[in-house]
Length: 405
Image (cartoon, rainbow, N blue to C red):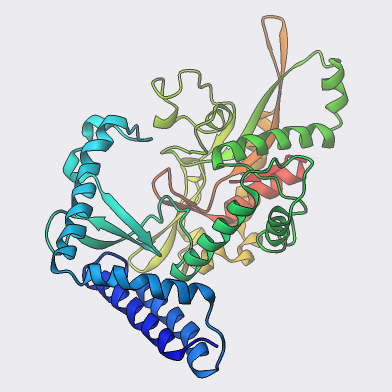
């Protein structure tokens, strides 16, 4: 059995270290508190339930003494803080030589506006603001680092442990024609979670833009199978020129799906598709401006594009809550019928045959790609979900595959 006095000394030493780190802002307060709780739980079992302490505790407890002695040195604080501040300050000078940021006009970026991030914990950055006792401050990540940062502090720690274990056990493993437990579990969780009720398989891609490229290829092939044209294409028996186009509900200020060639073609003209950004852009698609919802003076309203100008505002009214706009009971409304007639007319007019220089071109609407209800790239507009549902239903009735981005 482990000597209880040794465990108590170990706990005392580690608490010294944690309090030092907390006092001098060398580690986030939330994480230090978590360490303290875990330490108490582990050591209390050994102290009060006569269980053996983990071997790591015994070894680390003995090795911690020199570290605590160093930290209690009056000059240690200044040495650590000085080195840390110097390294953080130098980041602002070093990045200018090697960084090429995306979506950034570098000549417009001033050094004083660059954020130096020391660490991140949960929803906050630890940001370096300059010399002094308060050089590291907490800053809320309001955009969730471009929407992808989801873990809270507890899940962040759990995720780090799982990733470290998986990396150590597998490193990198080729996926095609191989099966291993982490990938299989991930697939099963996704199908039973976000994919429940509609998904049956999972295809992995490493980023959003290539995911849309993959989806476009899948939708194209599905369209060919559903419309029994796949054999004609594969055998070269189709003498007509088929232009692959798409239907897409977008906002006048621009849509955005990614930076790869296919996804940039699958969006309406905008600053993202200008000549200096994409000189090969042609915009292969039918692009529809959708009605949007907005909040004004405590009431929710709809803003309809010009082609619905004949509809008087009192015909669709206002809404007390956002949920009323999303309510599926609107599917039987007069406005839903109007939306349906408009979408049907657009699909019909855009599809068909054209003749040019003795070449017959058949234009087929091969897929529909729908963005999120809140359209961020176009300026944080909220699409009328009724219009989206009508658009999706009209396309599905024509066996046009639907992609949700």
